[in-house]
Length: 371
Image 1: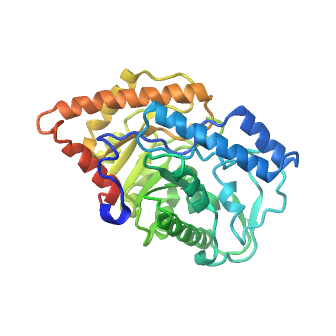
Image 2: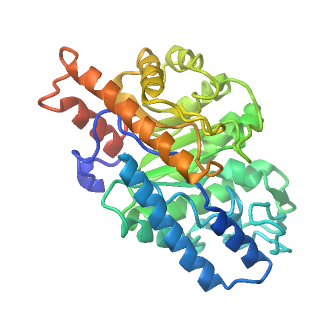
Image 3: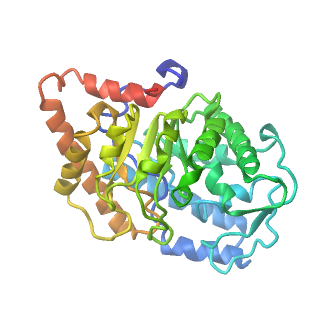
């Protein structure tokens, strides 16, 4: 991965145990209505885009006021985890672009091989550039990975679905390169469908490596058990990721723990994951708000398996399905709990609260990775 000089990340921009979000943020009810109106041809694209801008500014402000160290645009321009990208890919056909409800999936298909990645631009650079202009904090920019995208495509072009996945990965790789040229430093690949196809972990990792190839960013890989309408799509344990994920050219795994419990931390330790771990300490599938003390206890549990310089604090998944007031309260509790544990760690002998060496180590990992 690129060093700090190459990416331009301020080493003092994040503390030890930095807090962040996974990607999506609470979607206001008014925005849901407007999105649906757009698909039913009652609203112009220009009007909808203006409302997206307003919603993103508000989401960023919520994250900043909660004290989140690394923010996101809340993915508020996106209807769901798939359509925003597929609809922008030449070669992916969407015969019917109308929707009864904005969150529904398109029925997408590929009838001919996809064009080369360099010739396709998905428009994510404009999204990042807008967000960069609204905040001074480090930004995590996420997008759905090639394996999950492929699960919502009717493949009529390739004899092997693996070839479709690889073609999608090359397109995402080119877009990621453009994102870095625009100033993006922290990129995350979301693979929410992978838990439903655990035997495909090796193929998914191969595709992830195509996406990250030659792109000088700090890369995260988020794998959860689904979060559609705040319900899991699958259940299980993260052992299916190993040993394949060791070959993933990423700097961080971002995993779901708060809802499922922390037993899988033993898997992380047993399999020797030696890079950063984004540990879920907020359950996004309930509106019950965690206390700061509960968040702190969950972080202490994580610290039994992962050293503080390799731990990043985040919710289990995106906050899309939570009411805004609940999302704000959960983020505040997350920040307060992380602050509490950060002080405890800094007060331990050798952690140097005054010289902030632990914070610099964490920042270095965010800048250049720990592979």
